[in-house]
Image (cartoon, rainbow over all chains, first blue to last red; front, side):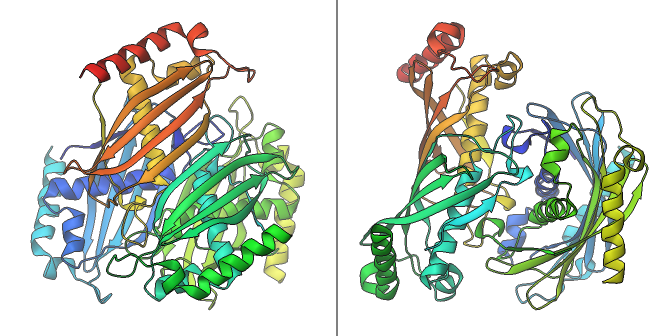
Length: 140
Length: 140
Length: 140
Length: 140
């Protein structure tokens, strides 16, 4: 899997002169959606088929600031797939390879009526793709 | 009509040390929604009844910067109601009464099927409320 | 201490029809800054005196969605003041008193040169105010 | 000059199911900064040399909505360079080549003390690059 790369935008900085911390949550989403697309399960298709995936929790550890013009690389990996919950991990690095932020997000899966979708049982192909990516990451 | 008052947030500043210009578009929306609520036509109710109101155009003239901790007052007025288009004007001032920004937005009204809703004919009570507010503004 | 109250804005929703999860990070900041102002230590004054306070980490547990037009009340409390780190907790509730989100953020304090500021030693008045608020919360 | 291409993010949509209008202002900035980089005058370098460029005004005409997963191409061109003001135009199209939005922004140039920088006189190399790009656009 290719990591997700993006430049820090001017509108993402704040008056401290660095990226405002809330924007890392956007980058996590961008990287996660890119990851799902690389897996062959683009989130727009999942939604079109009636599966929604709200965020259940997230945490971020900010290690080092970055600012406008910096290039950030986000490494995404699956931490756990269990029942109706998917846990994803993120490492963000700058162009020098220095760690900027580590983060984690938990996701539920719901159908159009808001009922929980059990990933392994009801989305087996997605689940298999997540496992292949995890294996590839462990081997790579 | 009471003007809309809000403080500039830290996350709305950028590395130039002032409010990033895109945030004024958010303030226009906040002030417009507050204005509709004061008119007795809260936008959430309008949407619940199946009327959507996309923005057709907007412009902003930035006169003077503001920053974190400043209090901004947004004065909203109706400029024109015509056919399916509502034009709204905004003046934003700081606590010293200095002009920060003048702006204008144009809004269409659509039903659930995306068909144009003619304001005067199909939303006469809303239209009458807009006219009362305009008259009150002119008199006030 | 008064909790922080604010309405969910239209621009804070996403195509799932609810508040996008990244916006809760903004609300945490708004509530924290209001809390500091109530303590008598407005963050803009702290910055003016050369003390910066970057976010070191944060986590959010999303319990229940909210959407445009909802009123969210954010209860802020100090969890820990230790060395150079302040930990703050947040509870967000809707108008029915239902829990929407619990969150926590950790903050460092730095001077203009980026050196760590030890809160208890170098900002004793701020520290005392945090302790009074914590005591009041525990008693209240 | 290559146009600027980017995908619409989930967090940029609103409960109407389409991109919230304020985000187009971000895209204008992203495309403008990419344009300056292609010209050989990256904005981060300009700022590092003490030239700041606040937005003086902007306008957007929204023609057609777009949403999460869509690819938007932004075509940037210089409309006018005069005294201390640069006017830039934007056309945004979807993958089918349909026009989503036309926009314009005006920019001032200031030095560290907030004094106006006359573009033609004080930034002649930047000005020449803008003219070359304009000529290339007209010829291309």
